[in-house]
Length: 360
Image (tube, rainbow, N blue to C red; front, side, top):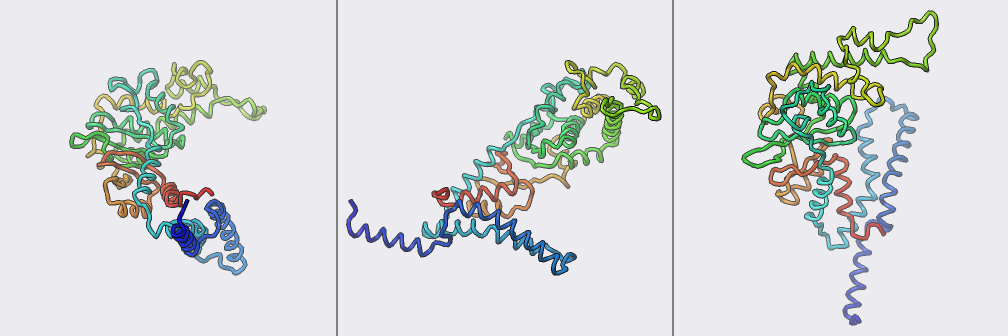
């Protein structure tokens, strides 16, 4: 049972906390109100802008203010939590929370050269192994390409990975790691597949030719597919049969690739199958990618900055919140540990700063 002095101290502490409370409602209410404020303020600004004839005025600062105001309830909850703890924020706890969140989105490692063994050519059986890897990556946001000691990846096979990712929209990010100074999995940088694809084509006219050739062939084959739902009229000649067009394109005997069993329907990865076939001739003397070559090819589009776990907590958190990139990479003594979108970093930091009873 508490003594009268302890009870008095507790009541004084509660009174002090209530005096410092910046947000009198629950944290859940703040999280609900923030997006609602954003929508209401944006609609109000849009209506006022039209009514006042400000359509040509720059809305940058106004929109920034709207976002800031919409986040005000969340910030007040954070300030209330800080005030209730005597003004201290456990930066280390925030750092741990962010690192754990990034680790959960580390990404899926791609087998070296997109296929398990270096000796398998992209042309074998229509690039079965390479295409199987691409098929498994379609639902992945982040993939990891480990250059290892510089002999694990060829430019042709990185092109195949980036071409498929660009066309399908996934994966969204390619993270590069490598062995450096005897340490494996060292973070080198990350980039968008579309940017990598463009730089690879610019670096070698043979790669560009193979890519354009495969793309053209795939378009032609898709256009030749019969469309039963479209009625034919006497004035409209029927489209050429797939077999006839395959012959014109020099793809005789390739139907198992374009219409694989057992469904015998058009291959959803047709472009990549044809690209693998077109690039097979370039692999007699394959161009390997090491760290030096990676920078030579992709420096303009390669994001090399990362948040290092061993940095000071305050410096680390400030860098996390001020990073303006689409994604933020995380490392531990240089070793890649994970990656998050910029929006996810800010959201995770705010959630980690909320008091422990934020759900109340």
